[in-house]
Length: 416
Image (cartoon, rainbow, N blue to C red):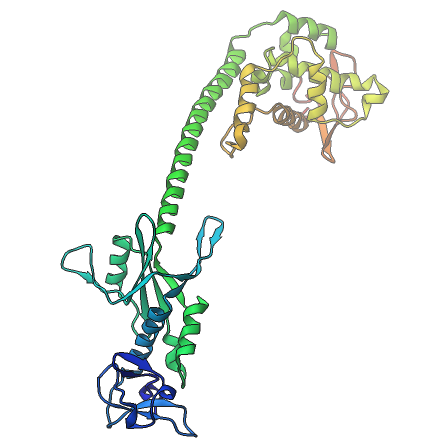
């Protein structure tokens, strides 16, 4: 016989029985729980024990209905259901087997709309001192909960699970113990709706939204501060670029360091505006002259410095030794702001006011201008250049003497 026609349980006086619990044949006095027609208990020695319809009945739902009702009967008798675990953030909450005070079968519940009734397979009641908590259980053998029913559970916030017993349809033999083990294992139950999980998720959502709003407020405030600092930075560069016509301190130091009597005779890489103009409170040309005089010109006369490599860090340490050479306040404010509270604003379009970055960029500019060479992450003074006295240089290619401010050799045309 096809297994779908083998009925595992017979109904007698409103209670389901296994074949082993009743008399053989028609004497079992059992009926099909689906079509209500008489059953015979088949308890032969060769075939698996089962119930069959007494007449040649084509009932195809007797097997699934019997399994469905058996599950409800087991839960009703044991008053216990295994509840699946839930996860709240990183915490796993295990319910396990929960014993209830009352089990009610197929009690109708008014849906969200008055014309719709929810009829769960099982209503399990857990009485508390203050109120009663209900759990609604659906048993699925061939038909799982419809979307409309699921939506009603969720709309009315009714904690509910579904137990999947569809795998039993593939078994030739099914008894109460098999169904009970599936109910107790917890591997076959899933939440339709869990009120606690939703409440906790709502709290988490509200908390995260609050944190997001606070963070956005902080970010907007800091972004506005950044814009203000960028404006100060650009204003400082423009001010020094256009408003400083002469600088006696710069001229005095230029006379002492390289022997010139006019600022116009300063090399182009000192005169040309760059980010150093806004980095320090002093005239950026003076800062660049400090770098030029110590790290390039003086190295030809100091053996222990002449061929020594250096980088931005060395330059910054040297500049710190200079009196009255301070970073502009907005530079310090900027560097505190971008790394404050582990919030990093930097991207490709964001200015970088870090002194090390600004000095490093300037040293690379000197490399491009032919003043320095770069090797192994360090800079070196270019051999053969600036080896004359303080007012003249020597072309690094044809060795002709040139003014310090010369950008091209008028003999060989080489870029200086």
